Image 1 (cartoon, rainbow, N blue to C red):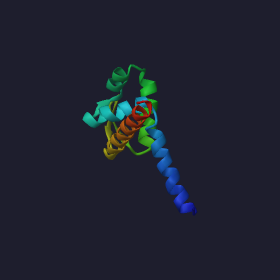
Image 2: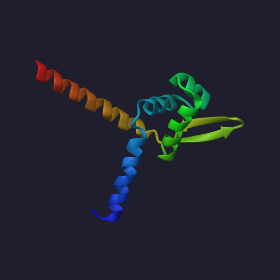
Image 3: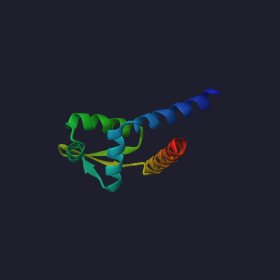
Image 4: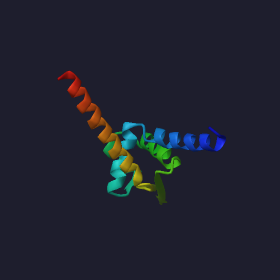
Length: 106
C-alpha cells in the first residue's frame, strides 16, 4: 500500500470513527429530519450542551454536519446525507447477524 492509499484509508477511518457513538448516530438521525440548535439537541439527548457540542464538533470535523452561528445560538444541519445510507447498511448487517444467530440456536 502506498502513502496515497494509506492517507485515503486513514481519512475513511476518521469518518467512520466519528459516527461510532450512539449519541452521534442519534444526532445524525435528528439532523436528517431538520436543522436544529444545540440547545434543542441537548434536550433531546438528555445531556448538557457542552457534551452535545463536543459530539457535534466531532461530526463537523469529519465533514458530516455543518454549523451556522446565529447570535448566541448555533444551529446544525446534515452536510452529508449519504451518512444515513451507511447507517441503513449497518442496520441490514445487524439483521443478517441476528438471523444467522437465530439459525444457529434453532
